[in-house]
Image (cartoon, rainbow, N blue to C red; front, side, top):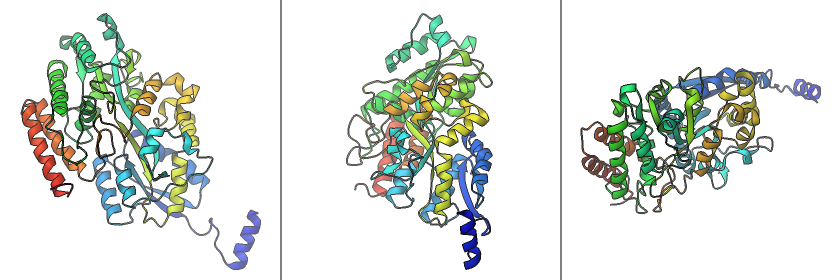
Length: 435
């Protein structure tokens, strides 16, 4: 068949894939470990697709967001494959900015975890393919809890959590009871705090899009957060986000850390963590409701609707988010290094289960997160730890600054909430959500 095709190409003057010159596929991605691993392994894709040449634009997260948002909104055409978050996917697909991801039987779209697949779909069609996903959960020092004669419940409440962190807090021994994000940002402290507000019965906006920040659930949640962190948190917590708390935990300085499930593989790795054998995992704490108590996030590969290289982009995305890719990472780097949070088959694999003692709790957290129903009162927005509307980034940043100020003692909780409410109302009115 190949000889026949080549002969026909010669007869009719058609160029074959090998002689036409490779298609340059420009991929914009974030500079984290899983994406860097993907770049290293992409030589396998190029070997199987000699007609496609990959060109990488690797950026810090904030810069990536800015570049890809500008490019897709202006139809600039700089990128053929974009790495986007669960926040952008529903907004951009509704605007018609993304091409549908079309999969075949071998890809097995039903193997994708339902919560992640749902967040990337519009009208039953997939508009981005998940590369790795995460939720949030409680990570803690089992040895410290046991030493105090305590037991960490599998589904702790915030009341139970407050009691545990108060008992294991021992700054004289260099151990702080509770490590939580304090650094301002919609993806930093507000990712965690939104889940806390959710479980206390709060929401960002009511069904009329009126901001709900200056309400009792917000006050209850933020008051609890500030009190616990001032009593049992590390010094300078208002500047700490994921990386700072990861470093503290790995050094043995955190009794309890509630954060992204992706951290579990790092803190249970003896090459990175001094307390790897002491780390244990349960679900994120709840208060009034379990709804929205743990977030949902994924980094995903998508194709701009304006791309002129959609076929090549589709081939690459199918490869990079497939079961075969997970197996390739396992073969090259070990099962501890595979991207998690996307496929049922990864969690079902006995080899993965052997090295990932956190796997069951991680999957449980992801499965329980529902971006379409994450608050006790009905909400008009999609998202657990964010609201998938364009205005949210600016609102989340402004509110994050106020919450960080409250943690640092530069404002009272009441002042921070009032200022945040005013800022959010101004943004939503400007956006035309209400008068």
